[in-house]
Length: 426
Image 1 (cartoon, rainbow, N blue to C red):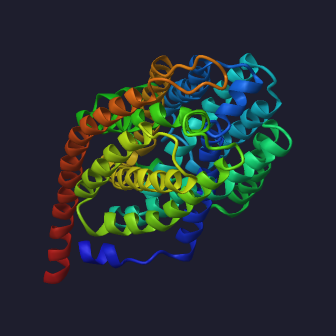
Image 2 (image 1 turned 120 degrees about the vertical axis):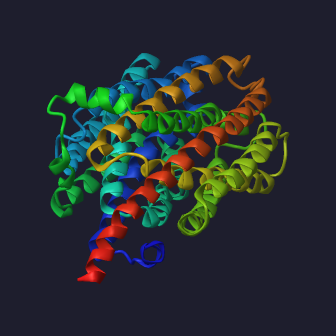
């Protein structure tokens, strides 16, 4: 069975689903990622302090977390395509609101609106992937879909920064809106309904379905692991561009190069990690990536004034470690929920991830300080040590997820053996 699953090719429609979900994720990730490279520009143009900027980042996370919890009970009650379109339209409107913001308060409100819709889309996408692909295909699928992260760095972030420096930062959000509208139309026209899960529903009440999903002990292990997984990224990324500009003295004009080359390296490494994730033990791959990430986080946050090429190399190695954690951990987590609970599980999982990340961003804003708009960030290295400790803790929790995932797959294999035997006898 395992060999067959590994060799199972994708159909043409499955390839379309992978491409459209990757494009969806591209806009969602770019909307979030753009805050980091625009961080220095935003803090100076809107006179935002590091602490306030931490709230701008975390406001998205908190609203996304609240939205995910509220949507979880209904996530398995509707066609997943309809759910995807509903939240994607809201995300587009929220991003448009970000583009029109002209004060700290308006930007904060816009990020809350965007998070209410955008934070649920990733969970719906994962539920679709889990419904349409077997576990030994999901590593490859995650590798391609997560390329949206790299694509946002290679194309989205450099283009957005170019538009922001040539005109103003508002134009970067308008660009995302235009691209998202095109993708939304493709989903509406080309994507088929995803409703097989509706046959397995037992809880008629949405809130009862939510409660039963929350109570499941196996699911709780996945929730905790994913929450810890997100903390490091939310702590480190928001102040990345401000650190490079004010501490490492990388110019605003050279920032796009840093993100572009980092993205190119991610595009190369992600499919490789995805294939490895389907062929070797996912937890071992995660542990290897975690130790690379720990080393590079400490190196990055202690970086002094160095040449541009060294900054690019350090960033590339850092993101290689991050990707080596994201893909196998996501593939493992998708193996835990049953089909009837997948939408609710993914929504709750995404919510806890976002809320944990929101708390982390606020905490990071309290650690990192800046005396003036142009002075170096202080205590960023302390933030690096905290992130390294969180990565170590996360290894333990994902080990528990790995054990549960292997147990679930073994149970599926046992259920299939009698059926195969009966066919052979006949």
